[in-house]
Structures are given as C-alpha cells and as structure tokens.
Image (cartoon, rainbow, N blue to C red; front, side, top):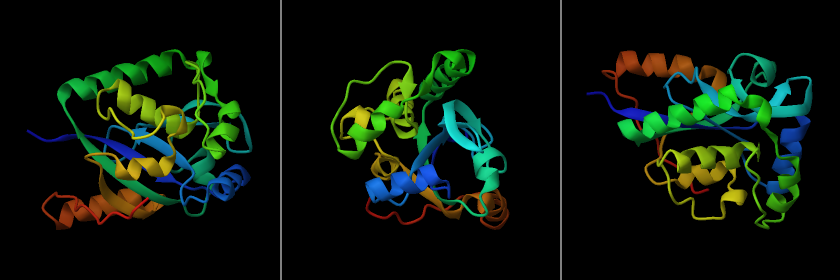
Length: 200
C-alpha cells in the first residue's frame, strides 16, 4: 500500500507585498500553501484573488504557472511532505470541500499582519486567515499536527520547517518542481529522496 502525504509549500514571490513581509519578518519565505498530491495540482492557500493587485484576497486554489506564481520568472521555494493516515486525509479533504463550497464567507485577515509582525498573539476570527495561520489551522483540524509550538495566530511559513514528521523533498525554483519529481521518479526507482533541512 502506497503511503499518503500532505505537502507544505513555502514560497517567496517578487510582489511588493511579499517583499514588505520579508523585510518586516526577516524570513526567507513569506507564503505557505498546502496540497494533497505530489504534483501540487490541488494546492490551496489564502492569497490575492488577482495577480495585478493584493486585494481582494481570499481562499484560493493556486497553480504554479498562473496568476501570481505565473507572473514570476522564478519562485524560491521549499516543499515538505508529512505522512498521513486514511482518517487524517479524509478529514483534510472534508475541510477543503468546506472552504471551496463556502469561499464567499472567508477573507484574508489584514488585521493580523501587525500583531504577527510584533509577535503579539491576537484573537483569531473564524472567517479570516493569513496563509500560514490557515495552513496551521488545516493541519490541526485534520489531526495531522497538533502542536505548532507557538500560538496558532502567530504561525509563520518557516515554522512548518520544524513540524514533526515533515520531510524536505525539494528546494529551488517552484516552476521546476514538477520536472524534478518526474526525473527523480524515473531515475531512483520511484523514490523521492529526503533532503537535509536547515534550521528555521
């Protein structure tokens, strides 16, 4: 029986918003997404609706080659996988379906950016998220990761580097990720090697 995984994708685009967040946090990555298949064709996050402007922003399906990602020449990234059980993956897909069907009820939590920058825990609202807080929410509600080791309102993209069970399988330009996976699958008997991680 093949193992099942959830995939965490850390990125940094060249948008002004991303650069501002990077300057404020001093971190390498400014965005987090989550997917349930290795090729990342079902990748989701809270992000801008249109590549031309940062607002409105909401729960969105993301594609490596369209919208904001598509507008970037390169996308610095790290991709991690976490092994999951049948029950955990079922919970995950149930939650994703909920967000897809109720998208209009949610929005990006602009008010969270200042307390996050100042590392001040804040009261989370059920219908507003920033990308990394939402990914942490998804991991927790799915029963995949129950302890992020910090207040859930302050979870940042690079915190996922040290999540228990997370394995780094790719580091580089996200636009080359799928080609890398295909090449490795052909050359290494179908096994994706786990790379050495860095300290967040």
